[in-house]
Image (tube, rainbow, N blue to C red; front, side, top):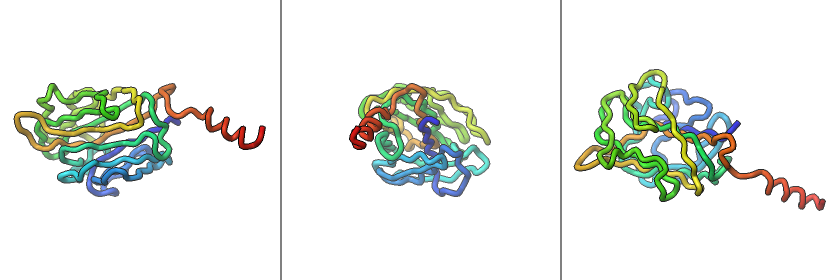
Length: 206
């Protein structure tokens, strides 16, 4: 099974039940260790405390039941825990908030300092109506008991992935992140087991 970690942003861990690959994010500062039900673990977190964290609609899919609200950077260390490191990952993303419209959401998904997915709309951002969410391809989706957002993919040459959230110009509210998921693609890289096996071979004195 490839490495698969989904971050579901809200304010209470038990508000909804996460899928096995998912973990609740309650505004924790970086680095915080997240471990999902599949046993995958990784260090991630916010560079600064979000302005607010929300539980919004327990009837929605766990991926969009809440949000962390505020301009800021969510950092993920792809070399930590059981994460495989650099490689090509499928990205699922949802920004918006159940029950409340958000003006001018902007997200830049970065490979450390290099933008690999630009969800800025040229700096204007994407406004979402109440119960609407912009996915990883900038398409607006209506929230419901299932999340139907379209995924994209990106190659990470470094081991630092970032989601940089902000509001657009000339003026807007803080942005709101509901869900972010990274799934290593088959053949998409990750740490090779060959060096580990070679080290074990040498340790046995072979």
